[in-house]
Length: 394
Image (cartoon, rainbow, N blue to C red; front, top):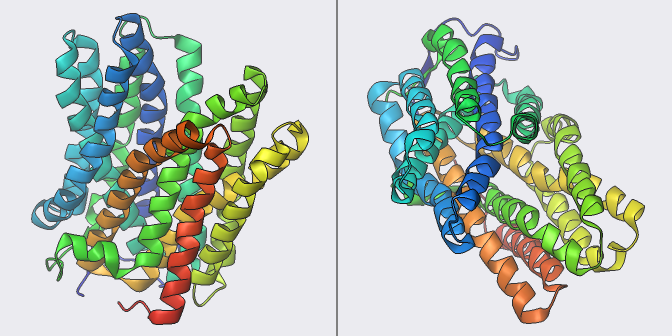
């Protein structure tokens, strides 16, 4: 598939930093804004007396928006250019982030959620495509490890800002909007080096979901475990008799694992001709870790050690899965597959909390661990089927 880029990319194994800084800056700024915005919006709605059910319904619009925006982003990038589409997405997401402050009627928050998360989904897809297109093949894992680490830091900074400034007044909304707008500068500077899509994708959008199933299934499991695990772990820990502060510390440890393992995992994946065995081993580690949760929940230090490594393996599914995708496809096929990748992540974030919550209701508190194990087991099964019955072709 034809693909060209603006500017001089230099030696094929050199990391072209202007392009990567632009793409990584865009996504880290969005990470900060989302990390700040998610708790901020929920707290404000709680103070307004909105029921938990309606708050959850409004929050679910993020996944809906991602599923709607994913197939559209590819077409926009082809028609208007990658950098130009990203610049407009920055502006739209910043304006809609500020719009929450002025939208006093609750119903207005639904179109705002769709607009904000639709625009940020476009930034995710095109940033990851730009990174994958600009990364040298033999250093793709390293570059994507840097990307995942910076993104994790962005998500961690957001709640820290929220804890420092609170939810009163317009200030948190201004900070969130400004964090997004900061991304405009590096994208604009590197706009001449953004990938150019000369042809439309050859296949229908949904075909890309199944084109590289090892990658798309990995990100589905990651989305389900991340969204469901993070949202319901405090419930699981509380029902297991763990103090709230200790549960919060365990989530922090898991977040540290997310950050510190991504660059090493990326570098290891660069040394492999085929990244699928590594993804398989990460899923096995995730499965074993999930099954161990009920036995370690009352041993804080053992639990912390488990979640440190487990958190890294869970996030590694995203990082290494994205690198696997980039190694298989190029050009407009890659941007379409990136859209399918984010689409599968969004489906996972919607499916995970529902499935894990239902498992707890049906089989008791340990249903939390069994449901997590079920998602990893699904990925192990898919990997074995791919090994036995077919190979991915790009």
